[in-house]
Length: 397
Image (cartoon, rainbow, N blue to C red; front, side, top):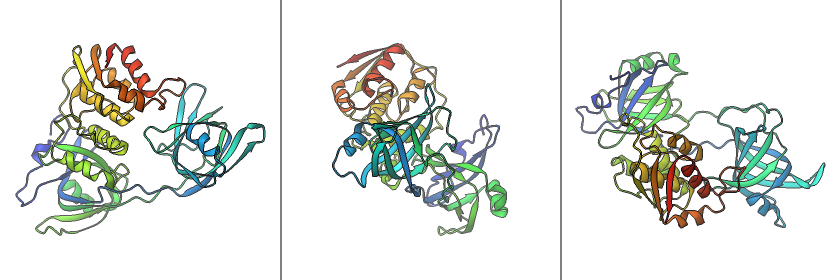
């Protein structure tokens, strides 16, 4: 162990006819890691999220915009789908809560009693609130964003959302099977006294074929059962009650298989994927967190951004990270994270020059994608202005 961290190289090899592909590591409150075990396989790594139960909600005093306005302008909007609708709850200065109305459908609408120019819109949707908000802030306003693209486009604003602020049951966890597991002493203790670990979590480290960590997922340590492994020998197969909420979907499996061959070394490997795939690519750049401590930030120089494939927000951040740091590296995945990265500590810091080739591709593709809700700039324009404000010389070609 070095600096409180488990040495991966000490645990990736064993004398068996198949490789170690996963490590289980727990970090205590002091940041000291403890090795729990290693295994050859995992069943249930890729799962679709459990959809939340359907509910009926009402957007009160709504001024629709974008997709929502287009849908309501049609003669018969009943049961028209909006995709996921993001509800941002603002105080007098900034958004303080974020809700997602999953697979929202327009059920009905009518003029708002106090102002016929606005609408009360009834939606059917699942409600997801990952941060546990249940209380209405003082004097809120509600900004709406709708659609299945990343990010969603502006859909208007409203004065209230009936049915949003209430407690909801936590969905049942989805189990995970550790196949061919060689437990270390902490995991053996968990197998002997499973109730002791019901509330604890650990990191499941996913190794690439070279034994390097390509991802780390949080899993629960509550054990439902254990039995001799289907792989034989002294190995065991272990069922974890909760395999965690941040597992990739089955659609991401081909992309993970690409990363399993080793960290990307060629540019634009992300380019053939759609927006969802590119978002998962960005997830992997952030999940592979066990990397060497970065050298001091580099400044100066001229970085070349290949803009041919920047057709959406995830593609923009894939391309910028690649231009600044190289393939498979992380430099933010949305505006706020990108701003943080420009502040230093991620390998490159202003001042430097960014020469953006084929910039017109992004300008056109993101022309209707808003940046800051209070500005009239597109996401592309916001990124360029942010770079320039932070001391970057941007050359658009």
